[in-house]
Image 1: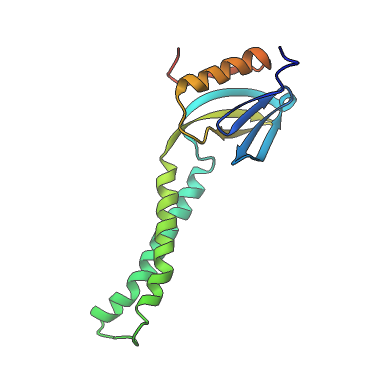
Image 2: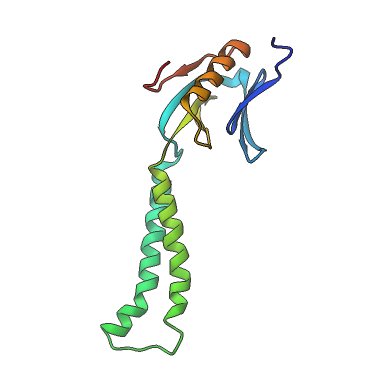
Length: 161
């Protein structure tokens, strides 16, 4: 059966005899050779690899957006310093994208998904199942990877079948 099956894919993760790969819209964005994998497990939770860096960037963007956006209002109403016509809208044009991007980063920090935690060469990578797929499909994927490709993927979620 191994000769018939070359690889198996579920959502954005593909497993083959030689490697575990991650895809983004059918473009391979990374792979880990099987012989370098020390440990691999299925987990559910926050999937951000650099949590504190992403938290810092999101808070800085949101704060900068508010400071840049509300500075003209502060000058107008508290200091009675009215700028030229149209000058009030320019800071808002820069502030709004900063607030929106910072907010998106902040919200995405707290999203939970299923992911494969792969320890290879002493570092841990998280390969995320991008689409919302039922746990049954992920479980079948893991079972086939274990039996057909001889991986030892552990299920560290609280869900079992």
